[in-house]
Structures are given as structure tokens and as C-alpha cells.
Image (cartoon, rainbow, N blue to C red):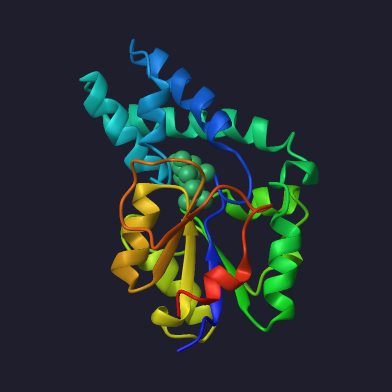
Length: 216
Ligand code: B16
Ligand code: MG
């Protein structure tokens, strides 16, 4: 078998939006009279919006109504979108565009599989809409990561079998989702505590496509 497609996670793999999520979730924490730590924010990586609020509510011990939950989610997203709207193409991680271009020139399909319901807006701000053969975001499937739905839909859109697709992820939720989808995965970044990846790369500048292909 050979590598037919790379499915990239968005937040933390193509660009850094974690800092914007952190500021917005910290505001939510403050509303609940709770201080969210950076370590806790890391645990929200790759986790869908509603599921992230559920985790914060559990950590804080706060009990609120469904209507209050919805209002917090809306206001968190409003705040997050104000950050997103300031984003520009120079926020794409260095080396990503070149790596992606090389993969495509070798006949490898490329897609995005993100839990974010704002993925297309972010990709547009980064001027990358035409860079992929398929984009799947958190609003297109019933379940978000760590369930496999997002990656399975990406494979379906590319008309490939899951085992022909390789996922690049920065979160535990994403690595678990790739495994459940029957896909190999590469961990992006320097995190040492995550499980399930077949290989790790520090950044796109040092990424070697041949190493990706050698996993097949
Ligand atoms: P939104 P990814 C994920 O994106 C983020 O890592 C995670 O922190 C966020 O809560 C989730 O998207 C939902 O985002 O509120 O924009 O719908 O890493 O899967 O690209
Ligand atoms: Mg991510």
C-alpha cells in the first residue's frame, strides 16, 4: 500500500489559534468565578466547543442552566471570532505551504479535518481555501474528535479508504480520532505526553515527505 492522502488538523497544525481560544475560555472561566489554567486549556485542544464548556463546568464545579450554557457558548465564540478576524496569511506556520505544495506535486491528496466550526473562516483568513482537495469541519459531522467522524468524512470526500490516509495532529483527541478511523497519524509539535502517533515532527520546516511515505 502507498500513502494516498494527508489529512491535516487545523488549529495547532497549520496555524496557532490556541492562544485565542485560551483568552476566550479564560473569560468564560471568570464568568463562572473560576481561573482556567494553561495546562487545562491544553486539554481542550481538538475538543469541540460544547464539549470544551462541559469540561470547564466539571473542573469549576459550577452548575448552570442550558440557556446560560448557550449564552456563554455564543459569547465565547463572539470573542474568539474577533481574534480570528484579525488573522492574516502570515500566521500560517512556516514551511506549511511548501510542504503541502510538494505533497500535491507528488500526486498525494490533501485535506483538512478540524473540530472547529470556524475552520472555513480561518482557512479563508489564511488565504488557503484553494490549497486543499477537501475541507471537513466540526459542523459537518454528528460527532467531533475524539470520535472518528471528521476524518472518515474527509476520506470519503477524497474517495479514498481510511487506511490510505495519514493524519497530522497536535492533540490527544485528534490522535485518538485517527486511530478510531483506522488511519496512521503524525504528532505535530514538541509535546511528549501524547499517545498513539506513528511519528512526531517538530515543525513543517523540518518535515520530510519521504518519512511520511515510508510509514506505508
Ligand atoms: P470552535 P482543531 C479545535 O480545532 C480546537 O483545537 C479546539 O480547541 C476547539 O475547541 C475546537 O476546534 C472547536 O472550535 O469553537 O471554533 O468550533 O484542532 O480540530 O482544528
Ligand atoms: Mg488541533
